[in-house]
Image 1 (cartoon, rainbow over the protein chains, first blue to last red):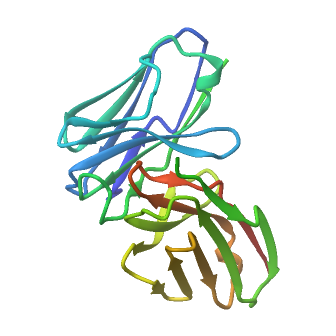
Image 2: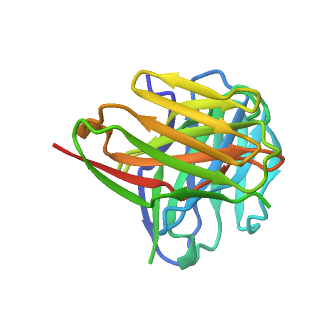
Image 3: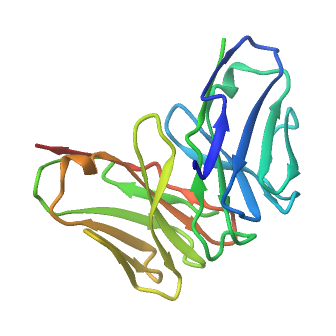
Length: 115
Length: 110
């Protein structure tokens, strides 16, 4: 009965590869997010989708492409991985579209290591 | 540009002590402020959300206050327990998406 789930939990890959991280929420929320937490533990938003539509894109390189097949899923695909992409990626969801009222619920994170 | 600062970066206290974590933000035009807890290797758990029109929120041994005009919030933890050991993150929602501080790493020693 996990609210926000992510797979995989750990991902180790070579530079230049393409990889995907999946996220699913069973809370019935309309909005989902991807965050990146770097080695200094600084957490920063990357994308936000509301009902499958992109509403926030925080100047993330276009090697990162989120895809939302339905409002319960927001997957993150990364092309041509670079060393600097190594981080923990968190998925989150909230009921309201802009996060103005409701709290956000976070997944357990995916630790990506690029060698 | 909104910036969120948390002081101290780390804090160690003996069990049973009351403690205060501080959060400050540079742009007072906010919709809400949230406190989260992050355990090692885990995701974030929401503790308290304070809307911009509110002054404080309470949940169990936790009390969060908000002074929007001065750009400050505090998280008060009463009667701390070893299970409270975690990193506590403050996040602000304004005209930009949720902006996080770097957190305060709390250790409660039994």
